[in-house]
Length: 111
Length: 111
Image (cartoon, rainbow over all chains, first blue to last red; front, side, top):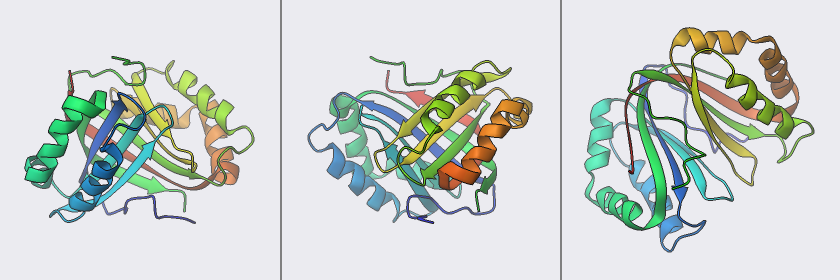
């Protein structure tokens, strides 16, 4: 089993931030590097559990990041370097996106 | 804006089922047809709000389906045709998957 793409499976409750996005084109300048950097930076934040991401060939992506509590999510949203990335994304990269903050109540896996 | 890949954005609370999966190979026999059929079938179930899905070239996928309540999710999980697909997926298609059931507490979009 290749589990490297999966986030850990702690005992609920915890939080999931579901970020669905459509890029304006499939590979806008600076996008991929910043996306990778944001995952690296998120992983250093307090309360970060893990993240999962799938990007398809049409520029549609879903990234789900998992957090221990709401305070961690708010702190990450306000992180200075992350704010710059958010503003660049809004102005240049994304045609549309939706962010949904949810509380994981139960979870199970194949094995 | 191409909103066709996005699920509706109703007033929270509602539920999100986050299904992350790694296929054993990128295009196992019968997988794509069944995946499409399951989205079509889910859309006919009571309480279904919408679904978003991204499948990457390495066979990793995230599908998030949105539901009005827990009862709708349980009914969909128990649906006979869906059960056959779940069993086939477990036996043949997936190397690994995680399902997380979460309650959406707040949501916002780019525009």
